[in-house]
Length: 282
Image (cartoon, rainbow, N blue to C red):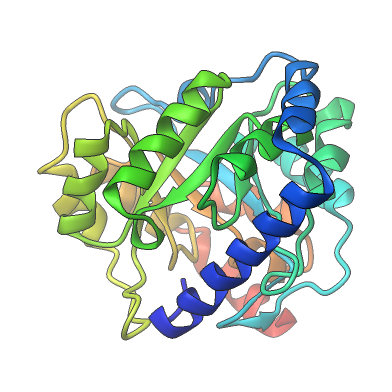
C-alpha cells in the first residue's frame, strides 16, 4: 500500500479526474453503457471456500505502484490475464489508475473480451470516491470494485456500497486495522480484504488476517492482501481463516506470472524456489 501523504495526493487527483470525466461524459450516458453490460459474475462465490478446500487467488495485473516504482513496464493486460486464467486464478484484479499505477480503465475491457476469462470475475482496483467511478467500472466490464476504508468517510463508504449493489456489482472492502474492520462491518461489508501493510511504517504483518478474522462476523468472506510471497504464506493465511489472497507485485515480477501463480497454488514447500526466481528476475 502507500503512505498517507501519497494517498492524499491520489485522492485529490481522483477528485479532479471525476470532475473531468463528468464534464466529458455525463453520468446518464455512462449508466446507459453500464445497462448494456453482460450480467456480472460473483466475486464472492468465486473466492469463497469451505474449510479444508484449496485457497483461491485473485491475481492482479499491476504494472507499477508509487512505493515499488515500475514492476512490469508495458505489460500487456490481455497476455497476463491469459496466463492467470490458465494457471487457475479464481478472479482477476485490474489496476485502472493511470498516473500512479500505470493502469487504464480500458484494461478492463481488454481482459473482459478474452474468451479465456469469460467465467472469471474482474475486480476494478482503483481509488473510488464517487458513484461515477462505480458506474464506469460496470460499463467497462468489471464485476466488482475495490473500496478502501482509509480513503472514505463512513457515509461515502455506505453510499458506494449501495451504488455497487444497485448495479449488480460486489465490493471488496479493504481494511488495514481493527478500527477500519469495524467501520467496514458497520457499513454492511461482507467481502473484506485485509491489507497487511501498515500505511505509516510500510511494515508487513501477516498475523493481521487472523486477528481480524476472530472479530468479524462468521459470514464474512476474507481476502488477505500484501506481503504474500509464496505458498507457505498462502497456507498460513488459510489456517488463519482467509478464503482467498490477492497477489499482484510478486506475480508480475516473476519471469512468467502464470508459472508463479501455479507455484503459489502448489502448497507449502514450493515457495522457496519461487521466491529465489522472483528475486533474480527483479
